[in-house]
Image (spheres, rainbow over the protein chains, first blue to last red):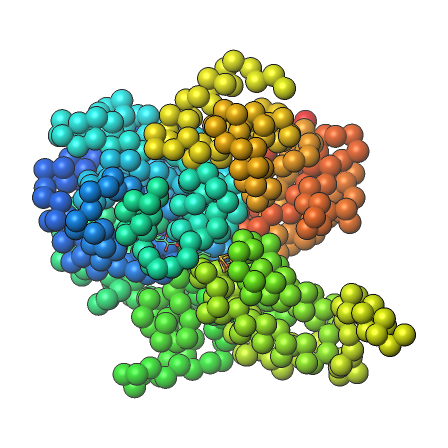
Amino acid sequence: MASNPVEYLPGKQPHPREHRMIFRNVDRAGWDASIDTYLNDGGYEMAKKALKMERQDIINEVKASGLRGRGGAGFPTGVKWGFIPPTNTKPVYLICNADESEPGTFKDRYILHQDPHQLIEGMIISAFAVKANLAYIYIREEFPHAATIVEKAIAEAKNKGFLGKAIFGSDFDLEIYVHRGAGAYICGEETGLIESLEGKRPYPRIKPPYFPAALGLYMSPTIVNNVESLCHVKHILQMGGAEYAKLGTPNNTGTRILCVSGDVQKPGYYEVQVGKVTMGEVINDLCGGLKPGRTLKAIIPGGSSAKVLKADETYKLKDGRELTIWDIPMDFDTMAACGSMAGSGGVMIMDDSRSMAWVINNLNKFYQHESCGQCTPCREGSPWMAKISDRIIAGNASPDDVDMLEQVANQIEGKTICAFGEAASWPTQSFVRKFRDEIKSMTKADLAGRIVNEETKLAVAGLEA
Amino acid sequence: MEVPADLEARIDEAITHYPVSRRSAVLPVLHLLQHHFRYITEESVAWTAAKLGLEPIQVLEVVTFYPGFRQTAPGKVHVRVCRTLACAMAGSYELLEKFCQASGIDREAINHHHPIGVSPDGKYSIEFVECLASCGTAPVCLVEDDLHEKVDPAAVDKVLAQYS
Ligand SMILES: Cc1cc2nc3c(=O)[nH]c(=O)nc-3n(C[C@H](O)[C@H](O)[C@H](O)COP(=O)(O)O)c2cc1C
Ligand code: SF4
Ligand code: FES
């Protein structure tokens, strides 16, 4: 395959520890989002190849690659594709999740803006494999330029005969359309996304069915995959599943883009082989270390919904290894074994200048704002947590309030329609459990037992009168 | 309400993207209307419903759910400042204050129920929004359709000046 040498824009040189595959063309010198540039670089060869393959062979390659979804849950992509009922007679849909709304995550935006044809090629291959003739790219509303760029790319591809009827001269038809969200985080949850695409409020659907692959858009089998996941499919076909699986570590294959934000010298995106760099290497090598004179305090390793890791913790693994926070390899399984998750790849670093009560309050406010309101524990609990942590940072809370904050979170987790419930409660639970003393030190013992709610005060006054 | 012919043509084209269900076009239709009229009026809701063969309530419930649809007029230049963690750590609360000061908007009047503050001269409006997926270049804001990264709160005048 034709492939030109890659040079990057001044100051945008990838770190030597990076393994650029999906982000190969991000910040590339002389690169633009046009189809000609992409074709000059060997683009669309894999789509052409795929259309001559047996569908099951493509799915088998994706299974063999071990690719796990990059949207958050890390579910094996090939396995998900296999959930379309074999007896299905309804149309199948493919949806690309480009909602990118998990705080701390900023990778899909660069693919959409700088390399839209890589995504379209990945989608052509994936749509062919799962037999979808209609596909949507659900782009969050706050990416207006990305929507325009992707729409232009789709038009270019259509002009060339890569989309539309009988693409690449095969008997396969495929239309891809951009669908723009409207500023709601819950549209990232795949069944909320589907409802949104159906023109309704994006209320996540009750499970089962657990996967839209069984029942999704318009009650038909639907495959929802993240932008990055769909791009990987192209490279899997190029390398072969088995070869791809040699990248990364067993069960945690391939590369992934880490998005690092917060208190480091060089925040940004870094594409690495999964599990081949440790948290310490991310901070000290890729990101140039902490800020001068600062020490590490806490890390949220996989988007704001992941449980926080505390700087001085050690993690005992089942295989006997004992890890410090610095030793954790950036993979799915070890991160889970350490009690958190690799999630969406959003790594948020906090140093000793940060108040943990302030951090959890910030996140509580996010979930307060974004709860869709369907389930009582989430609708009522998310604002309640924000109210309690508001009190804490204002110095108006009692020590009991800190325990109550944790209890409210406990009452949401596992009791809701969608995983937003966990997303809202895990950060709260983990911050309170790991930093309870610090958070309690901001409270006042003499406030214990008082009534804080104005309505309750009125009600009590009424009862006493 | 007068929907210009070229806008209606774009709306009709957008509807063709949803061959299975016209209802699916409610977001794109509302986006196009909001882009043109700057916010969604009651008339826009009724017009959208008629266009798509829906009850007005089916459109209104969508409008009221999504923060991206406005039911009141914003300023000529709409600014969205990211509120979430990485940006807050990099000073986005201060950034919001500075934008409010520079445009004469009452910061206190912006809250959960009134998310958008408009300047008295109608030139600017400001909204505090959640993570804009650019946390590595915090603090960030969207001015109209443009992302501004690593914004220095001391330099908000310069940002606004680009849009006058
Ligand atoms: C509250 C919530 C928000 C989510 N937001 C996103 C998102 O912004 N982007 C995304 O790709 N997946 C998001 N997901 C995960 C999706 O539901 C889905 O698992 C994913 O898009 C599947 O793609 P993958 O298998 O390629 O990862 C979210 C999940 C939840 C519960
Ligand atoms: S958990 Fe929250 S976001 Fe999810 S469906 Fe229930 S109320 Fe909506
Ligand atoms: S927190 Fe502001 S862009 Fe993510």
